[in-house]
Structure formats: structure tokens, C-alpha cells
Image 1: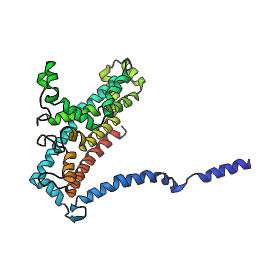
Image 2 (image 1 turned 180 degrees about the vertical axis):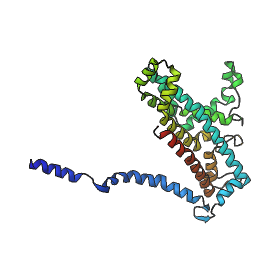
Image 3 (image 1 turned 60 degrees about the vertical axis):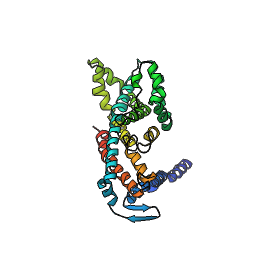
Image 4 (image 1 turned 30 degrees about the vertical axis):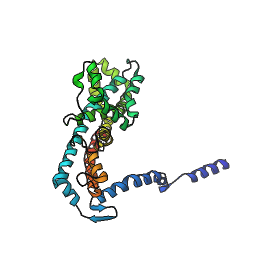
Length: 310
């Protein structure tokens, strides 16, 4: 008995007490501060300076004034800003709507070969964006596929889709939707699989059809996942760069018709933009800061609306 009490006392002495539990958070907190918080604060601070990294000059809000009032910079910014919203809207309508549709189909117990279809839908996500962008660039080029389409009686599809200002952005967005559709689909599948079968069976007995079950039972129950998918889509689209770079170029060709916030930031803050072709880190940080503020304004209310308990 005395030995048992001694062992319990020894075990209790090994348990962390007070603030010692915070030690377990330090590794993750350190990584977050070094790779997330510090770069964010440094970027915001950099937006108030101009010049090279070795010779910076404090200019206050001049970079923000330049971005919104200078004819060249403001026209490029609002052009990229509008295109990014269109890019996001296409993803919401095509990628996420089809993701929900595919998820409903894949969670239907009467459907055969569900695992095969899941693999097919998710497979493009595993490919490199540069590879898929280049392949779709060839597919959409009439030079490469014109003869094949003509032999199939589809010669009218042999158009310079990526060279036309009115269709280039839509084509790039649809290619992006095709590649990343697997992620929201799998998230919706996981959410729908968590819906109680008893609720579905009870509603069926009450005479509800498939649409009513989805609209009034499944959709409200997966609202938190819908919110998360919306936020991820918004954040990823406002940081999109690689798909435009691989299918068009960093200038958002043709004639800036596919220019997004991500490509504009790259040209201004990293590579340098025509006609000066000299990188302006301060102005680039200004674009990044404005993007961060827009993300915060959208993300925080969406989280509150979709993640709060009803």
C-alpha cells in the first residue's frame, strides 16, 4: 500500500502544472511567428518605404496614393482586381457547384464504382500546375489540335481561345477549376458522409424527395464545410499566379486580359514592370497589404456566419 501511494505521488509530480503546458505550444508558435507573423508585419512595414533593400526611404502612405491615383499603376491594379473577382466567381459557380454535385453522387450508396470515380476526379489535383497549364495550352491551341477537331467535325472549336481577350480569362479559370475540383469534392464527400442516415430515412418516410432532403437536411448540416471551401477558394484565387504564368505569362496576356492580383504583385514587387522594368518592393508590399486586408474583410464575416452554432 505504501509503495502504491509512493508511485501515485511520483506520477503526480511528473504531471505538468500551472503554465508549463504552454511549453508544448512553443514549437508551433515559433514556426508561426517566423514564417507567418513576421513576414506579414515586415510586408506591411515595407509598404511605407520605397527604394532598394539597402537604401530604403520612408514615404508614409505615398505608395498607396500612387497605386490608386497614378494612371498607369491604378489602371493595372483595378484591371487585375476585377479579373480576380471574375476568376473567383467562376470557381465558385463551376468548381464548387460541381464539387457538391459530384459529392452527392459519390455518396449515393446505390452508385457503383464510386472509388474509381473519386480517383478520376481527384487525379488532376496531384499533377503539377506547370504541367497541366502547358498541356491545356497545347490543347486549346488551334495549331496543335485544329486538324484533329476538323477530322471529328468540330472544326468550329479550333479557335485561339487563349489569344482572344474575351475568352482567355474564362479558359484559364476553367482549367484551374478542372485541376482543383477534387479538393472541394472530397471535402463535401466527407461532410455528407457524416450526415445521419436516420434523418434521411425519416424524411423519406415523411414523403420528402431527394431535392428536399438535400436542400433542407444535408445542405444546412454541411454549412461549416461550405464556408471553409468558400474561404479556401477565395484565398487561393486572390493569390493565384502559377496557372496564369504557365498558360499565358506573367504579363497576363493577351493585353493584360488574364492579369490577376498575383501576377501584378509579381511584376511590380519582384520582376519589375514595363516600362521601367525595375522591381519596386514598396509598391509590391502595398499590393500585398491591400490583398491581405481584402482577404480579412471577406474571411472573418464568412467564418462567423458559417462556423457559428445555430
